[in-house]
Image (cartoon, rainbow, N blue to C red; front, top):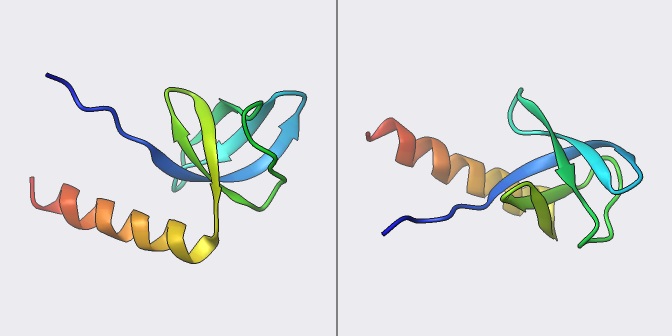
Length: 73
């Protein structure tokens, strides 16, 4: 059984349906056709698609939890 994860990232720029999203210093292309987002906003990304817009406080808290989890492995 595998587990799928969704990761928060900050939208840097958008061109058409694709956005450059920053994941803590790593930038990836993400499809944003499922959400209404703008540069500077945070999105939850799963399998290359932004699936939800989230506020910065929630994104920061989620990233903190990820760091704690990864430091334990």
